[in-house]
Image (cartoon, rainbow, N blue to C red; front, side, top):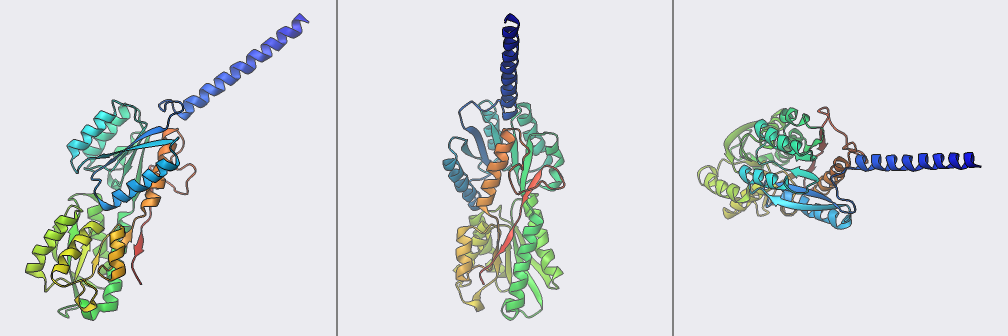
Length: 350
């Protein structure tokens, strides 16, 4: 009888130890940074929150938080288009409980990316970087808890160019003012040396030329993705080059809208086809969509803020809990091994 009791005690001890070890293992695998019973704390750091598309992503992240208040708590920070401000935000957050960083960097140069990754890596906090150029991905690979969520900017530029091609083929007799069979255009760009700026600018024109349409650049102006700056730039250009401008290609919708506001001062782009200069943007913001429906804007390239927010949330939660980044999603990492690309699509009003 004593031997039987001793066997029972040994078996029970084994079972209890197994449960404790298994529970401890699961706890470690989950992630010890998140406080038990508390939502994960996620810092969303934008380069400029007033940018239209980013504001739409924020609204969708806020919706996700309201639907998952027990799982995640987003806090939003504005870098105000200032790298110094962004670095101060990151440094301060690293001194507090932050379970994940989601950063849209002001400066996407290699040195800046390395500096940000190194300080976050030191604290062992997962990080998602948004829209980093493929050429700078190597600087992110050094940290196993870093992932890039991006878009194919070559694709966005190509789609933009294809919208212009359709407009030219449909209304060439109106667009080609001087009948020289050459599309004379103004290019409004984002930040200098920015990956999106470079790719969108290059591939939009390449798509037009690949369609057999000759082009001539009247002016290329940096407008920093900003509506007001684009409007002021177009005011100046129209006064000197207005009779030559046959199209305006903008690296985003904010600049395209600014250009349209300028053109409308001079009687253009108010619905009369004979007095409409094709203007294209990127983003498919609500205001751009409305302008397209009214015939004031030719088209845009759609980024989906709902998808962007959902992917950011799902991948972010996977990183926090040490799961493969794309676990439970329909997305795949590309050939870099750390980048998830969200596709673009054309947005026009037929």
